[in-house]
Image (cartoon, rainbow, N blue to C red; front, side, top):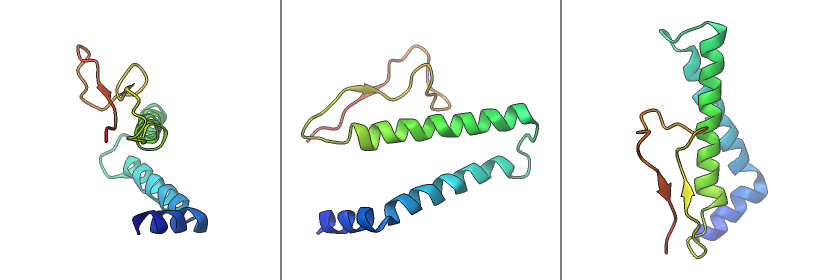
Length: 96
């Protein structure tokens, strides 16, 4: 079953390894040609990446149980989605 596959990936450490590899690959985008290479913009790029990572973990790990939904904000003062509207109040919840 899918639950068995997920459990095996967690126990073996494969899920964690793939998560870390994906995060590392995303960080490599900061060195693409044309990306600003000064310290300030590089730091802002890593800051943005870590904030998106935190938002993803909150949405898909911390608040992932559709049997116990939690309304939470996906974009706010410290998590920007890149083009979020300051007049909107972004909320979501997983429902069954």
